[in-house]
Image (cartoon, rainbow, N blue to C red; front, side, top):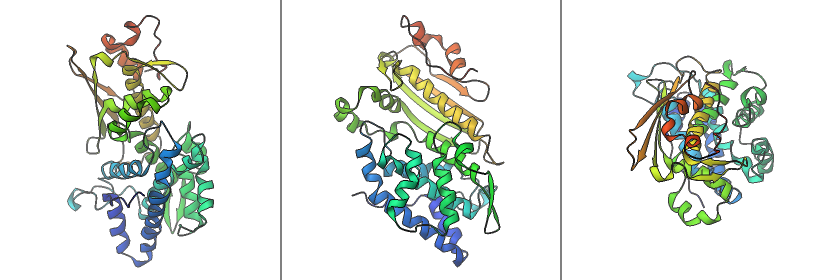
Length: 337
C-alpha cells in the first residue's frame, strides 16, 4: 500500500501559517486527514482503473504540490526566503481550498474515466466521513476540483467568481484556474515510468501509446515565476520524428506533431488561466526548446504566447513538418495564430 508522501513546501508553509492562530490549526489537520486517506487508500487503485493511461496516482498529486512550490513561490510566505517574498496572492483559506481540491481532483477516476470530475462528489459520499471544517468548504472544494477539466470548466463548474468566508474574500475561479493550469503542466517524462512502459508496451492500447511516447520526449517542464514564463525542454530522435501512431480521436498522428500539439495545449491552458489571474501571478509565455538527436537540425527555440502557437510554429519550421514529409498527412487542428 502506498505510504504517506513527503510534505511539500506549500504544505509546510500552510502548516506554519496555521500555527500563528490556534483557531486555524484545524484547517491544516482537516486537509492532512484528507491527504492521508486519499493517497494511501484511494489513489493507489486509480492506476488499476486506468490501464494504459499515464500516471494519475499518488505520485501525480505529489508532483502537483511540488509545482505549486514554484508556481506560487513569490506569493505565499515560507516558499522563499522572507526577504524575497513579494505579494500574498492567496489567503490562508484559499490555500486550504486549493490543497483540498488538488487531492480530490482525480479521485473520480475510481468510478470510471468518462466524466471523472463529475464523480468526485460520488466518491466523497461513499467515504461517509466529514473531512471538512464545514459544509461551505466542502462545497467550494467540489466546485474547484470539478473545474479542472472540460471546455471552459472554470466558468461552468464554479457558480460565482468571488465569495466571502470568515470575513476573507475567496476567489473560487482563480483557484480553479490555478489547479487546471498546474495539472496541465504536470506532464512529461516524470509522469511516465519508462521501465513500466517498456515492459507493458504490448498491453497498453495502441491508441494510447502516442501519449506515453510524447511524455517520454518532454524531458523538463520548469516554472520560472520570477520571469513569468514556463520553460519546456523536449528531445526526440531523428528516426522518431515521423513515427505515426493512432490516436483516441481516430486520426493517425506523427510523434513530432503530437509534441507540438501538446505544448500548444499547455499554452491554451495558460491563456485560459490568464482570464482569472490576480496581479503578481501572471504567466505570459512558454519558452519551448526542442533538440532533434542524430540530425543536422540545430536546437529549435520557439515562444508560445498570446500571439503565436501551433500553426505559427509549423510555418517557422517546415523541415520537421510531417505534412511536408508524408504524402497526404494532415496536421492536427491547432488554434490559429
